[in-house]
Length: 272
Image (cartoon, rainbow, N blue to C red; front, top):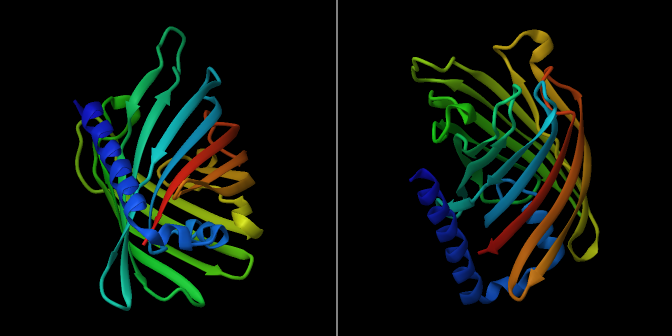
């Protein structure tokens, strides 16, 4: 039932966005370069639906491949002429490999994360946003998540120049509810991002996701990727889509963490 409801929700988001595209003449007015910069801004006043697929290689003691598809609708809400509330939801679909011989692969939905950034409406100078992040135990299999709810702060800061867009997003999640089976958690995430934009929506990008599990032993705590890739705005009729691919090598990782990650993304853009 969770899977059916999840698919219906995703379908509704995409259909609603396509309706906005077909009914608004503003789509054709935005240049590809401007759309690329907006897509690189986590607190842009821009409705978008990224489908981000992360293929993680050599996961677990059997060194199998893990796949995590994150569907991340971003919906801004105007709070007047000076402020916006930028909401971002991350809905993961996970294909988890076996960790022991004889086990099967586990497929399903992981835990959902919801962030609400309060951000100034101005896009000049230093752009920032801050607000809470909440983790909801929406997993449909115990292998794919934790039964405890999570809560913590999230912040983002960036600068948009003529060619460069750079900044960082960070959050920390603490478990805030009890569970008879799952342990408490305290997890940190830092995502620096660096983009160089060419004409017509082509750009170079690097956005590694650095994580720390504060409850793990010191030698099992950090995952630190290094890498990057390329992106391009492509239009399908009136619908602009931000395509992107990046490859990362984990220079620091837990024993059973992935060695490499290949990230593929298609982001539907719905400017206001």
